[in-house]
Amino acid sequence: MDILENSIIKECMSMNIILMGPPGAGKGTQATKLVNKYGLTQISTGDLFRKALSEQTKYGVIAKYFMQFGHLVPDDYTIEMVREYLKENTFENGFILDGFPRTIVQARELESIAKEFNFTIDAIINLDIPQEKLVSRLSGRRTCKNCGTTFHVEFNPPKVTGVCDKCGGELYQREDESVEAVTVRLDTYNKQTRPLIDYYTMKGTIININGDQPMEDVFKDIEKSLEGK
Image 1 (cartoon, rainbow, N blue to C red):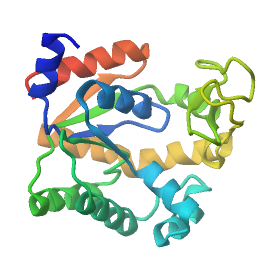
Image 2 (image 1 turned 45 degrees about the horizontal axis):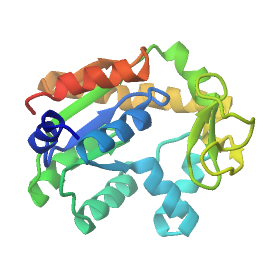
Image 3 (image 1 turned 180 degrees about the horizontal axis):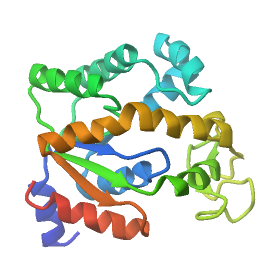
Image 4 (image 1 turned 90 degrees about the vertical axis):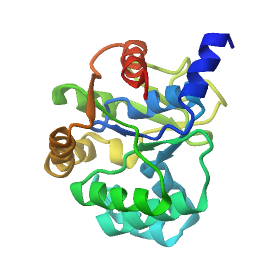
């Protein structure tokens, strides 16, 4: 690690980010890059719910019904789960909220939680991409049953069809990534989450990034947007 890179990391200590965008926009990919670059902790509500589902906790039982049909988990349960996670964990270098908030109700509650736990949101990044490209992005995704690594049948295929390059585990298509479920997810996003972009736009706090370009270029644009944060 060179001196310049180290200074950037120090400069971004305790930076908290909201990462927004429709399903399939590449939030997970960019979140991973931010984690590796700045040492942030990724907080993905989707991952939290899937973990709760595998452990059969109260959140998992509630989430199962909604997630398998591509619907959002109701605000009350999502807010409670995120609030509990933020309360029980520490984030030395800051965090990335990936998938939260997804509604204006959640955004307003996050503002209350931030005041309660004494932290600030330093950047709200929105990955913008034409909707017609999202169905193919999502329905082509395959996930490893063993390690969770994701691939794409067109854009990032595994070396051997159906087999994870990383651990050799079996790849599968999640229930919420079938064409039918993806269509519902995008419709839900447009109705419930897109108004949140307008909400943050009116507050003058959102940073729009062109997500319809190579992932490395998307990340470069994100880095530029974070300079001085």
